[in-house]
Image (cartoon, rainbow over all chains, first blue to last red; front, side, top):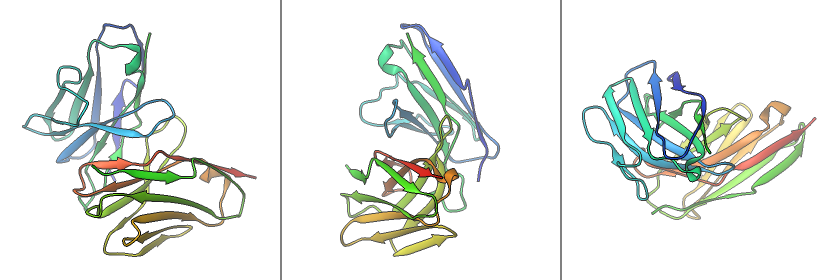
Length: 115
Length: 111
């Protein structure tokens, strides 16, 4: 399985500001995914990021609010823009890194609190 | 889209007993069903998965069963240990890209 790191691990931000979350994986992967996990809730897919193409966003998530970059096969960023308290969540990246392409492995998450 | 329901939301068992968590899905096209364990402050960890062409899969104390006709799948943990205490999530996927997650089961193993 892949080793995935995220930065920052947690942050407290003021409303109206933006935060960029980094996801680094120790091997080249085709697909990277960004999820949101609200407190005590399940995981919801925000978008899928392939290297060299625009991210694909799920219903309810838009590029202006959650711009994503995927500059190479081991790195991606998610920006949470113009934050409000409702954006307080854990943000997780995952990668499609198994020999079986269906497997996904998750990073440790970034715990974001917006005040 | 796919809808995954998971039960129970909380489960307490005595150490050594078995634990069973059940999930149902709505889309018969779903063909991949992973289970994740999430410990406090950590990301979800894949513990076992099953494809739709298989009815059961085991890995030591963990097993998953799938009933395609009834559209439900279950996680079975035998001989539970305190370190099994965590939140468990099931998921279903059609394409292997988009995962639809259940709402989670908080398992507590009482020593």
